Amino acid sequence: MRVNVYTVSQINGYIKRLFENDVFLNDLYIEGEISNFKLHTNGHIFFSLKDETGSIDCVMFRSYAQRLEFMPKNGESVLAGGRVALYEKTGSYQLYVNYMQPAGKGALYMAFEKLKQKLDAEGLFSSEHKKPIPEYPKTVAVVTSPTGAAVRDIINVAGRRNPSVKLVIVPVLVQGENAAKDIAHGIELVNEWGGADTVIVGRGGGSMEDLWAFNEEIVARAIFNSKIPVISAVGHEVDFTIADFAADFRAPTPSAAAEIAVPAAQPFEMRYKNANKRMTTALDTRLSKCKMRYEHAVGTRKMQRPLEEIYELQMYLDNKLEGITKAMQHTSEKSAAALNAAMAAVEALSPMNVVRRGYALVYSGGSLVKSAADLKQGDEIDISLRNGSVTASVKGIKDGSKETEF
Image 1 (cartoon, rainbow, N blue to C red):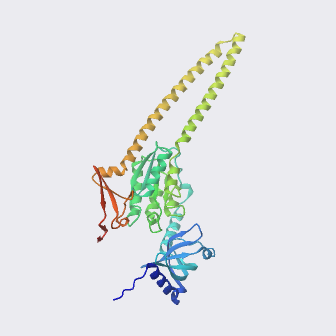
Image 2: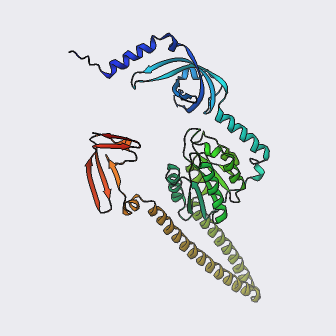
Image 3: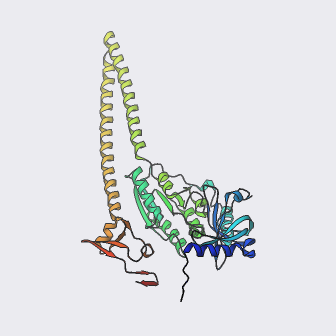
């Protein structure tokens, strides 16, 4: 019995021709809500259209995108016209859009605008309620997920800029049903504690759905009611949330929030040197004037008062130098203590601490394996344990509720 064998390219090509010859798929309009919107640097637009039960990938090339009279956004409901075709390289189909217009607001976008208008009318976004961000903080609290990229970015940037500033991580959920309550509770805990000078609230990027916890009223009111200045740092530069409007300062990214909250150590050193230089110059000027008066008094046999001024100046200079020495010693001791605390915090986050508690780290090709989906049959893996390492080959994968046996 003869069996026909085809290549992947042949099958994809055949299916592509089916799409191209289908009159229905070559000219149609689809209404849906925009999600995962991305404007590429080359001018092409990539996004998904979704409804209650499904979604379809879409692309709008630059030549058509330039004709748009509005800028599409996540959460907006639009009417998109074009053709459905197969992308042969991946075997996936998508809508190639050549026309798009608003078709009313998406549900999430409408909820966003409604809450924004309500809170704005109550004065929660008013500039008169904005608190200034401390210029020289001792402690900065960070309300975010303890495992996301955002917290690592903040720790790295803050440590590089000024290790003497203490970071306190307040772990919360940043996505999901209970995330908004958790974030608001984290802000309230920082205020009850009262040991922070500034609060950073945020997370990394994602879709409008991923960031929605920061569009909840409970989070906005917790930020507004905070007695400690709050910097919002949600998503990327193009992402805006209700939390951004309620915060005392909006940072475009978590890294930028760390730049804003933690001053660089070098300007402190420069200010100290400049202040010391100005004081030395002023003292030298005053001393020179006293010497001139002393020399004049010698010539006129009226020495008593200039000598007294010289003695007074000497005492003043000695006191100032003693104060500077004590201040420098105190600063040095404080910086050393802060550095030790920062090093302890970094050590606590070290993956090796996890290993020492009895867990294991799995590597494949020199990279840490974060998900079972990253592995396939036959992959060589290295398993790091507390007292050594093991090399193994993958023979079976269990991913969530599915288990694959080889």
